[in-house]
Every structure is written in structure tokens, then in C-alpha cells.
Image (cartoon, rainbow, N blue to C red; front, side, top):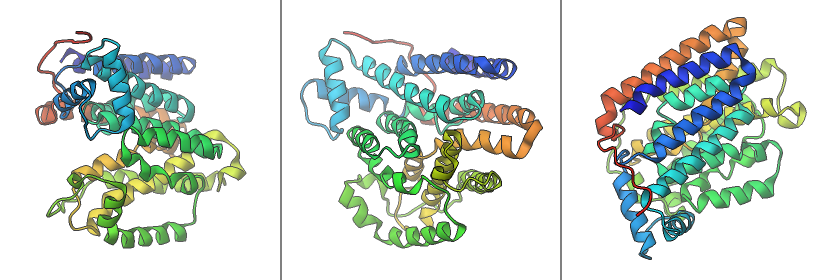
Length: 357
């Protein structure tokens, strides 16, 4: 529990220090991420699927066939063969996941300190890493792949995507982003794309079966309650679209600026998140909880768009608004731990560490 109590104060201190000394923002970002990687890596019994993963890792080491993808099995098997215990697998994946997110934030965010805070406090990210081992690692790889989309390096993008698919096959849904996310489309095109998406939702059972998606994604009925998170992505999409329009940067080939390019990619990732979250309107038997997990592949856009929107629309008051965002997200983090901790198993019920044995 000490980790969760100290984390908000550590991250808040790093944010304020980075605001006073911007040149040290990268250093602070690295320190916070190594702190996160270490404590999420040494956890024991924390996370919805912790003990399931532990069991699968033991089976993999024993040569038992599992449904896990080949990339995960390869890493887990060799770590165990080298003398490590299952806890070492958690530590390695935690470190790699945080590393790829760290690199992505440093490269693509216009406010690294704010993006670090959002990563720590928004349940889309750090808390999700306790429950989505393979998928969250894949999400970090896809965040890293933004550079290949911006620089139009198709071969490297495809190689990285194949690696990601080898850890979680759901990464295949990211494939079209190379051709879709590289520019700002017209409003008419976004509307047209929305209609096409709605039509394709009618064939979701066939498409899911074709790519081998688990039946766990589907249920007999769907919770029709409105998910307020769709508003977050929708508002950010609209404001970022307007902000980029103000900057007169309609495509990456014209702007030629990496930061602007990352905002464009983030804009289209936000659009995809909106599509995923409204899909229950068009699909009668989709598991709403699994949709949130699916949108997690694209939610890195929050860490890019929120700083951009604040800078674009708040101007010289951006720091004041950023501090407000920090405190609101920190409150969200604390409430999530207090209210939902037991349900999502984010509160430790054992302090044991098992690295080798």
C-alpha cells in the first residue's frame, strides 16, 4: 500500500519540479518511469489475471501447450529456463512496457511532465498494466510505432506489428493505422468512415472469427449504459482538429514536423477510440468491458492530445490548467484505488517477492 500512497506525491513533485526546470523534465520522466516499472514488476498477487498468468508461465516452462501467443511463450520459457521464477517474467514485461511508453512520451509529447502524470494517474495506463500484461505491452509497442507512421517507414512498421501480434493477436487491428493515421482528413471523410464502420459492425462476428478473437469478447446481451469516456476522446478529437486547423497543418507531408505529426496520429487514434466506444449501438452482443480493453491499444493519444489542446487553447494560462488536470487525475487515481481496489485487485494482499527459485 505504501507504493500507492507515495506515488501521487512523487509524481506531483516531479511535475512541479519539471515546470520550474523544464530542462530536467526528461530526467524526472525517467525517474518516475523506473519507479513505476520496478514496483509493478515486483508486485505479488496484484492484478485480475496475476495468478492465471503465474500458472500459465509455469506451464510454459514445463512445455505445456497454452493459448498464449508465441512471442510471450518464447520470452517466458527462456526467462524460466535461465533460472528465473514467474515473478521475473512480470518484472521484465513491466520494465519493457514502461520503457516503450517512456520513449514514446519523450519523443511525441509537447509536455513530458504532464504526460507522465497522466500516464500514472489515469486508469487507462499504469493501473491497466496490472491487469493486461500482454495487451498493455503490445499497446506500448504500438505507441512506439508512431514514429514509423510519421516517417513513412512501412517495413519497420510491419516488422514491429508482427512482433506485437506475436504477443497478442489483437494488435492486428492496428494495421490500417499506417494508412489512416498519417493525415487530417476532411469532416466529410470522418463522417463517411463512421458510416462504413457502422455497416461493418453488422459483420463483426465473421470478422472476429476470421482473426481468431476469443468468444469472451461477445455476450448474450450488452450493457447499454453510456460510457462517459467516449466524451473525453470526442472532445479531444474536435479540439485537436480545430487546433491543427489553426496551425494550417493538414498533412504530415506538408508540415514536416515530428511534433505536429504525432498530434495528427493522436487525433486519428482518438477517433478510433470513439468508434470503438460507440460500437455497442451497432452490435447487439459485444462485451462492453472488452471494448475498453480494445480501445486501450489507441488510448496513448490522450498523452499527446491533452498537452497539445491545453497549449493551443489555454495559451499563457496553460500551466494553470495543467495543474488543474494534474489534481483532477490524481483524485481519480486515489478514488480508483480506494473504491475499486478490491474489485480490480490493485491493492496488494501479499508483500512476498519471488524472483528466483
